[in-house]
Length: 169
Image (cartoon, rainbow, N blue to C red; front, top):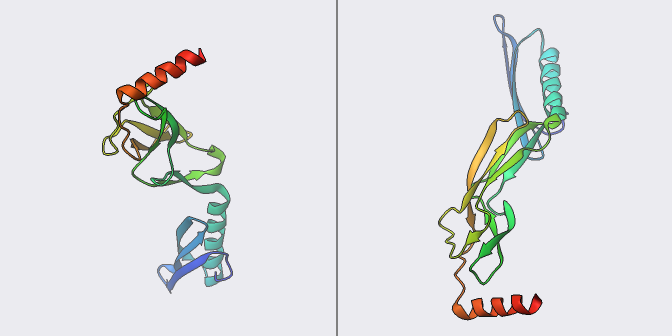
């Protein structure tokens, strides 16, 4: 077991009634798997079974971070009535899931108005984003927030924008 790449722990035991048993942990990248083997005929079979289970897991599953509060969930979303034309939107929670590699990436469903209207407060959600697995199972749904406050444009700023739009046709 100790030659298995990423093996970080194991606990073994055996008895006449239960056979050879073990609980094992293996980490590669961000994914950590734990497996239990119960009732193996001998020590060699116990370790071979654990290795086979880990290789199956790492070959067929992926650990995917689908939301991270430090990264925008949606970039440059339109804002009206502000000094800026767009704002990045963030979730407040990190969410990582285990997915079959054959299923591909989760699907997103975004619930937001066509554009946001200033003022925007970073303490108040402006919409939500939901992620679904390949089979349509909801993985997570999270509120979306601007990272910083977005203030309303003053009268002068509005006039400047109108003048610019007039000049640019």
